[in-house]
Each structure stands twice: as structure tokens, then as C-alpha cells.
Length: 256
Image (tube, rainbow, N blue to C red):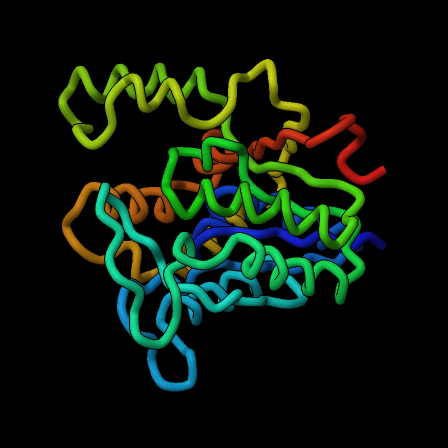
């Protein structure tokens, strides 16, 4: 039995990027541990450190069979060019020292004697500042804890760029430019592992549905999240039944 630690930026990222992989690993007898940098909140946390988003994260982890959930203690850093001041009770993730954040993650890796750490690609996927920081912290923590293998969760860039061109032509997306999309995620030829998780699509969809706070509101992202959780299972599995990784160093089998 191997122990895999999946490190994510925010609650719901674990289901979107690695939900099927985590469910498959657990089904095959391995131990999965989930670490999240941010609590999904921009302001001060509720007394006792609890938040709606972290409660949803724990529910998602139960669906996926994750053995342990750890929050590193940071607040979201938000979108946009201006970084808000830290809340009074904790630092924003990108405001914190890289060594401090990596040290906290390395403590988990040592405690779990993890064989594999999952982080993000150098672009942080879609270039969110917290996601880019996950990449940086994962690299440093894996080195500190001497974790044997580092996998970076990503998506193939080419189909995303094709989809972007369609939706931008229909004027359904205004937030990102084509240049930003071309600089996001990972070129298909650089991806080292494509994991078939179609057999676990039900668990991935159910884990996404645990993040009910992300389906509220009238924005496009909320509508898209809601649509994903309501897709018929065969359609969901067809669209989201593969997860992608780049292994840092010499690629090997997923768990050899």
C-alpha cells in the first residue's frame, strides 16, 4: 500500500482535478491524504477555524475515500491584479513565506511517509496566483521531505484552446484572452500520465456535488459548476473520465 498526498489550492480543486484518481487509488488499496492550502474564504474564518468551504471539502473527501484532510491554515488570495490585505486571523497563501508553507506541507509528507506528492503544473493550470503558489510550494516541500515522486496535476492545453475559440466566438467568455489560454496548463506532448477514471465518475461527480456553495449565484462559473454536477453519468464520464499529470524527473508507472 502506497501513500499519496494530493496538495490543492482551494476546496473543490481536489474533485475537479484529481477526484477520479483519488477514488481509484483508494479502491486499489492505497492511502490517500488531501492537503489544501486555502480555506476558500476571503475574510476572517468562523470561530474554531471552521468554514463552509472546508466542511464541503471534508464531505468530498469522505466520498472519495480519503483518509485524512489537512488545511495548511491560509486564506484565499483572490483573483485580479490587486492582492487584498491579509485577514486579521491568518495570511493569504501568496503572502506567506514560501519556506513556511513548504515546511507545513513537508511536515505532513514526513508524518505520512508519503511515496508520492501531487501538486500543480508550473502555470498553476489557468494561472491563478494560488495555483502557481501550489506548484512552488510542492516543489520545495518534496525536496525538504525527500518525497520520492512528485506528480503535477494538469490538463492538455490543445483541447482547451479549441474550446476557448468556440466559446469566445459566441461571446460566452470575456475573462481570458487567447494569449492567456495558450500560456495555461500543459502541452499534450509534455504530459506523462493519463489516468482513466471513468469507472469512478460517479464518485468524482458526487464529490463535486458536495461543494454546493459553488453552485449558488447567477455567475457563469456557478452555472457551469451546477451543470457539471447534473450531467448524466455517462456524459460526465465521457467528458471528465481522464485525469492528467506530469511527473517531475524520470517518468515511471503511476504506482510501480
